[in-house]
Image 1 (cartoon, rainbow, N blue to C red):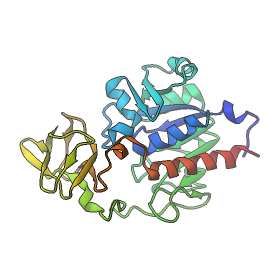
Image 2: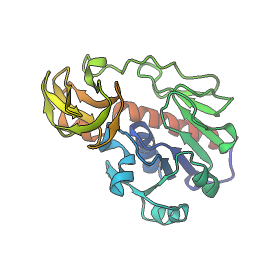
Image 3: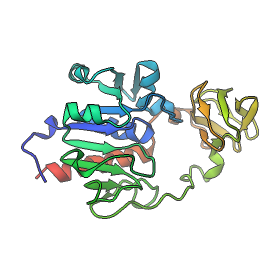
Image 4: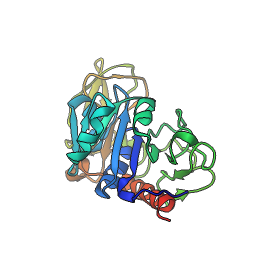
Length: 271
């Protein structure tokens, strides 16, 4: 435990660049750490306006004043850091990037509810977000991701709370606020993130099969047009509070998890 490096010199590699990973990356970048992220070639983020993985499609993505840039090779990481950006590489296993960077911290923020190949030996400090990891076995520290009293808690031994399969409550709604498709096919949105919707309105179609809102509110998240979806897949998220500005800001959950990761890094190295 511990390092001879200054905290500002630490190199942090984050697997995943979806909503929660982006909340973590934003908080760490604002704390002046050097961050690099890896993603799959076709990420499926729903809360796209606050997910750095959109850079995979657009080349870059800005979230609350922090900009991420897609680069093709690890050699470009340093130049993006000098510009104040977060570099993102398409590297699903993160092996190529990890071997190049030799990071001080590796954070598995894929949020897959299971370990997709992260090991204790991947870095001096390995952190796993949510269920699927065991502190002391495959990661050093686990961060609780379940909404509630322990959200963002640093777990030094054992596992996070198991996945309930029920989304967290927002404005009194849980399952009702999610949009799911009942058919496999190509996703074609009829609305945009930030739009107001009413209960029963058509938000998107999948091969002409409608995806309908179960509650009224604003569209907080929605998949990209043209992606292939599976039956039962989450394709959107409605905020019943109806505040459009919240669709474009990091959630309290992502901020809390980011705070937990920051605490874990300070706990590990600030000795």
